[in-house]
Image (cartoon, rainbow, N blue to C red; front, top):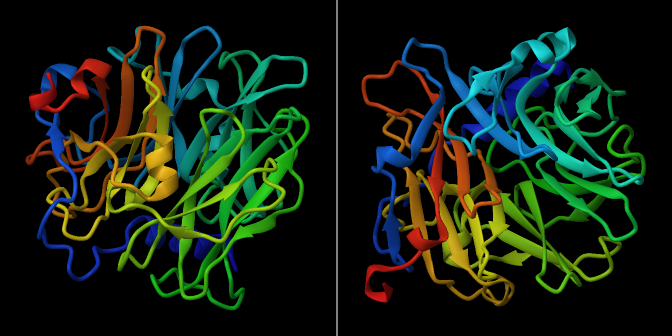
Length: 380
């Protein structure tokens, strides 16, 4: 597959249309709607002038500085970066600190991760699509300077989205792989599986991929990895790109050496590009693009709140939150995000969306929530 073809594939995965039957019929969970409270929102990069700002992710540097990276155009070139020193209330563009090669040769939905080195320090790492495999740009000094690392020989038409530090000090990366190498498209019916790769050197180099989740007649992609509260188990949440049923999940109790057979998530976790954190009370807050059939917020940027035990057992959870309201004509074109729990307890959710009806293109926007917001009215 050519690099140009890979980019078309990745864009198709990011933009697949809603499945037939998406019209709302009933919600299986209550919905807390915070999406219209502009006092909690900040526009990081506006699309009002017609420049499409899309697919952001975030990470927090050791000194507390927030970083956000995204692309120009749907699945387009990388380059934009912004940082915030006040918990996401204000942002400053800092594109110039990235290598020139980043905006010239890296593309499509960059993912930003914090990788713990063997010496205890932290590297910030951006993964992207690049000719030859997975592009890597890395910072050893908390985001002050960045450099390219060797291109990883890993599938990255859609850059890898899942990440986890393992107990032996290594880092695990998770991405997607088309089952049939002869297939050059990314239709919903094109089967994909989830791979895992290991780094022992803080994210500079990565080992060969190993397939860890596959299901016949399923299009598994965009995994998110989380650890159980007691630390004993890893979970992969996976987008299922046919969008005719639920998302899927699988589990490992040996730090990724073996994985259970993928199974359906609960209805409320059905969506694209999961990303989440543990709340101070121990519950999970997982944000994503809503793809739950019958949902009143189908295609919108939402979050599921429930316990790990709920997730593990396929139970409904507590409720969902409508975080930000995408008003674009393409109601599914939102929801790739970063989710951070800040030291003061603020939950910072960042995504891309058509922010206002008269905007010409998508914007990158963040919203600040607090744990006190995550209570149903009859529970307050």
